[in-house]
Length: 87
Length: 90
Length: 155
Image (tube, rainbow over all chains, first blue to last red):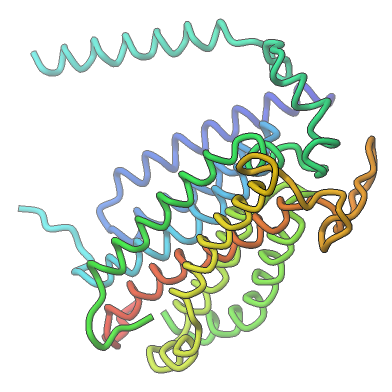
């Protein structure tokens, strides 16, 4: 397998993972599961940045998006009630 | 009516994105401009650093970084001012 | 949040994350990354230390850490390093490069592995911006955690 075929296979896999994790982050009713799905989305997005040869943006995305935002969302959800109210 | 409007907007946006993707240049071959060439050839001797991205962010385009630092400072100051209580001091 | 698994993982992993963040900040002018990225990685290590411990331990641990002074020192140091260029040149001029001061060594031109003692004002700006970013993000996470006020853990 040469480099070009591997590149396109990685691109398709990363795009599918992005769509699946974003849909999961919207569809989950449990808020903590939604936050974890968004962390997975951020991690896959940083992998996409690394594949497109932008390691600076990849490091920033992995640090801020996958770790710090998740910690802030989890602490903010824990400050409130942790289930969505359905009327 | 709303569903038809949503479908129309979805189809139009998808067609626009597809057309934009078709007209992209191939990967690793951006359009050649004078500025890129100048930065890549002169950054190492003018800014004295091996990382060209850092020499652009902190030297050639320093005012951009100054504004970004101001934005972050304002955000942190706002959060600390809204959420600070008497016994919580950081 | 404070089970035995998370505590043991944190004890091993936090020091490695902090060392990697400091490496990214210090080598900002040689390798990918810079002040903002290294500060974000360092702050994520500190956030791990905050989230994985109990309330009293966090209060005792972060009581002596001067987060607000670090933020102010970072912003003022960045502006001061930029103002240093006004000595005969323009704002943001790299005056320390090739002058023999710290981080002001002679820069080899061409393909080279990169030496730490080069870069001029870029290295100083990386350190100041990193200090500022890590203090700001850590103080946001810390104040979110301290707002809980020692509530009981359910998950």
